[in-house]
Image (cartoon, rainbow, N blue to C red; front, side, top):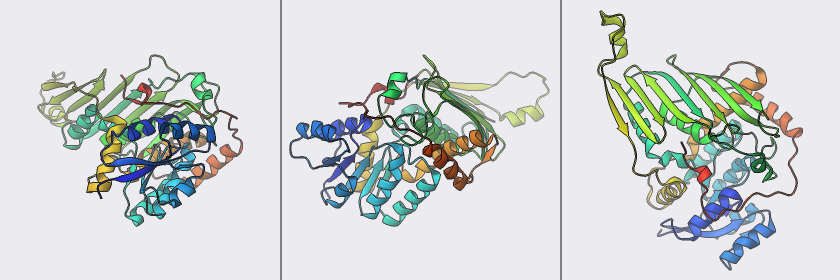
Length: 389
């Protein structure tokens, strides 16, 4: 196969940006085979850009059309799982926007379907392409900081105004979006957190609903985590702080990795702290260490990089940088955080996902999707979706 056609399901904010990237020929081996959206006016806007392009108002018709070999899902979050499962069952490759879904129970079904289908299943975790996070993962996974002791991520520069939340009818509702900052902005960071440091075993969380905005979902979150070896972690995120902070610190028995202000600082001890603690004859010994600073010359390939990697996986069998089946990991953290907030208890992972579904169902029954607003159209990728410090 020299190339393949992909159909975009949902040409709203991020879908319209993907449209521009793919239709301009920037992704080698991938071309646009169709578009789908429930808004006829939005469809017409994009049909004028590529006269004759197949356009659908029902994603099922696109899947059955035979005109595409893959789909890119960029609909509201609660639809990701349903569409992906139907597309995979139909023999299509699937690349979905984050999060994988809003429910771990659905993500499990997606992963089972993907494995059974044998098709390529990817997820748009574009921040995995950032050299800073790739370097941090390399250090931690190679044992460069020794045994994990503590993780701390303050990522509060996902600032959003009330205008942003009012710009799309599905935004900031339990029924339309499935959650707030944990489901929309922070999935990137939750994914990187577990990708670099591993999965926590239990979560205690405070997810404050409408603390800074007039919305029905959370816009301010503090998560406390504990890992299998007893290490602890904190994850703090918000859409209500300006200018906000983005700082990750990972500490182990052999040193520390810090990412802040676009640079990585690696402090490596010459002796394991555990040895120093037991053998030192001093009460207050200094730290004997080497310090390396890493400032990348570029910030990675972002969304286009994930699209190209997906195309290479379909055409050449390349390994995915962001496999869709790994999307369940950050979703388990956010679902557990919600459960902790709703129950007032510490939640172990894996959690009682059926209990999560029951509680979310109840919230969705009382949720109201705003009328008439379909979201913005983007001719290119917005700076707000990139890694910022």
